Length: 495
Image (cartoon, rainbow, N blue to C red):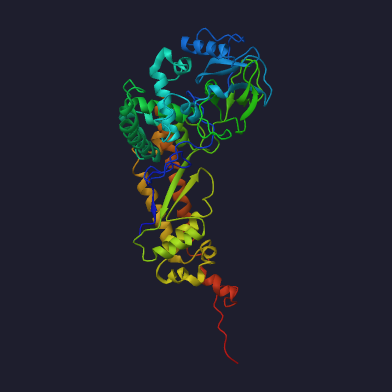
């Protein structure tokens, strides 16, 4: 039997789409601010002044003072760092109206490819991927220590996040069988290969610019900081970190993404510049934490990979089915031509979401892959412009039965790859007292298994309807008026 479906991991809607394929999209076009751990709306019991909470670390207090010295924070700034359930966040120092500006940061403080180009390493980094040049820039500033103009910002950055790229081998075993695991391993392999390349081509030949040892762990740190903190929705900005803005946490209760923009405004006593402007998507009381929405389209697997947390609900659970036209298929060229005419290709990726219908083009694509035998006449060129419309409805019993069997077998095979059952995961959730990383692992693997069960149930129900479905030949005969109301074929006798 020709292989129609593979359930090897391909992270749905992921920044790195499919680690098995050579098309990596490192940073997408959504705000990606760093998040610390859990998410909740909360009121912070602290002094509502512009001074930071004395319980906050010395590094954060120094950073806050630097923001004041640089006039990024003024007496009019309505937020300040605070200790929150997530760890660290920004809280309102007074009541804040919905859509009110809560912070603005001048372009001269942005960390982006332009900042790299204007630095000492600009020339040697000019041909690099933007994220790699920014990563090297951040590492260089980190190793410069007190000599770095960014030292107060660098000092508040965490050593790691709970992103799966920082998990140990033992921790990764908890997501055994998941698409997230293979995506994570693919990302790590990709980052390692990029490090070895930039080490040989840029770092080692330019010891004057990089007079310190940069290890693979250092490079992963920079990659993790960019992945969790980079923002790329500003005009003409594909990758930018905004110090201060990346202290704001995510909340599922925020359902819009239009809170950040690039504006022109005063950047000093007598100067104007582009400013990163952030508005509160919610009205807040003094002492409440300010939240934004990181990305409405990311799955929980994406959130775990990018930020190191997931949402507790199932709305972000997703599983990607990978369908592929086999090169060994005797009708490969015809099927590929039909797929391309309808906006698809040799491989197609379909994201299955919890409680949602299957993607509209998934079933027609499956039927196309399964076409053969007596149904193969539909692949002839005479049907080329109409075949997709035919594929939107059942073709034949054998064709429909085959796609049901293939999908159900693939689901069963994928489910066997997990080392726990749904019931065992639910019991662990009930017991509680889990580390953040175990909580992520259980949420991801439980969500994937439930979606695989959902897909299996859909095609199980379809199998039970095979005898009552209306297939192509019957629809064709009806169209010609050759089938009666009871489904019987009408034979016309000559007069």
